[in-house]
Length: 253
Ligand SMILES: [Mg+2]
Image 1 (tube, rainbow, N blue to C red):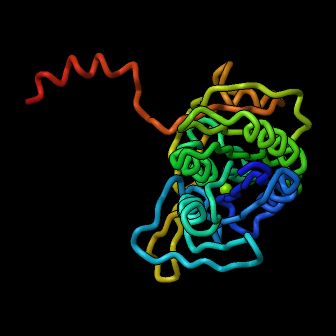
Image 2 (image 1 turned 180 degrees about the horizontal axis):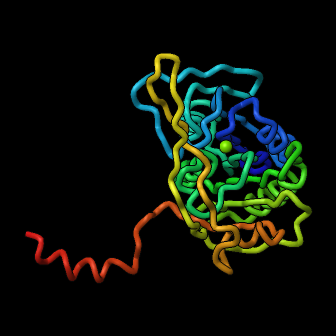
């Protein structure tokens, strides 16, 4: 409809009360009508989980502000179908407390919130910021960049089924690099503890990360003080394997 303000749907995985989503919301209020649909508790590491085994509850905090008893994917899915009133023009997810680069992208509920937007054919952007070695996170830089990126995506759109994964350093950024999703040296670890009755329980621990990564990767860009913007897409097919796989599956039956 001519003259209609863009509708921006915001979610995150740190939960409705996290400071990052409030910084993001404040930053983009001038760009259009904003609906916030976020998990009622932390969902970091939830990836693209969709809740199918229990009902979802929606608590309306204020007009256009919703806390949902679900994952970031649930929040986007539900908002698009029931809460927004019309199809959003943009989905924003974040600002996450901590980077989502390299293999972390596959675990990230923040990226998954944007991924759900992309799957629903809505341009989408995930935003994460690095945590400083000590002290509180300042979300101001990431919020400012998110707003600029959002403005651009609203104006120009994105190819269908793609999203942007934006990662912001904790230091003032030198500039912005367009990057690939990188990889990292990965080691799975878990800390074992004992409960009062002596039975073991476990915490998944931090995992080693490649400090800098590939020259054109997301890790390297942020480590060198740049904002990293990676275009990601929803289709996971590895094109280069199609031919070789066709060669060896002939003998399987
Ligand atoms: Mg998180």
